[in-house]
Length: 269
Ligand code: AMP
Ligand code: MG
Image (tube, rainbow, N blue to C red):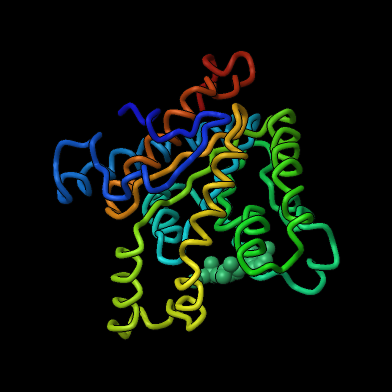
């Protein structure tokens, strides 16, 4: 699958109205075939993750961003299905605590970045500090405007020190969000996922899209690229993200560590 088309070129000016959240042009089949294609990718990812863990050399950071209901939790559940929990960590970033707010905004982020042999998935991230923070004027513009530069430098530091970074924007349409929020209201088992605040955020949809466009335009770099994932179809979203991660891990040319010399002559009695 040539997923390059979803990668944001460094310096590209992004207008999200030009990106179709319904797109599925890289897959010929429909939903059922799309869902059926995922287990083989899960298996491949499981193998690559084991290799990453065994080799203990590379660090991998996966950033998930998107509006409410865009599918961040779903990606974690489906794309990483079957992967050994040893060596994979999820870090979810909520409203900062008073202690976190007393520090600089990258403080809580840096503590969660991956070590050697680890994959860490950020469910929301430091990008909230130029998204929700910008949309709600939680700090003055001159404060958040500086942050794109900090973020690019921070991610450069991480990659210089051996981290591979992949960032995914899960792109859903406003109508798709309406349906998913309504479903959360209509299904008792999904009520827990709904919060009144989601409706208030939805009213700010256009402001969020502008904030995301700024993020995608200013922070997709050679070392830490963004992918804009068409996410109205959950199965397609899962396939695209799986392919990007697998292709990236394959590009690391990982090897199992060599055993001690002479192992081939040992017979266990
Ligand atoms: P959820 O992902 O549904 O659990 O919600 C987490 C909430 O925390 C979202 O509404 C985010 O916008 C909010 N949040 C995350 N990071 C920040 C931040 N740095 N400042 C303010 N709110 C944040
Ligand atoms: Mg939520």
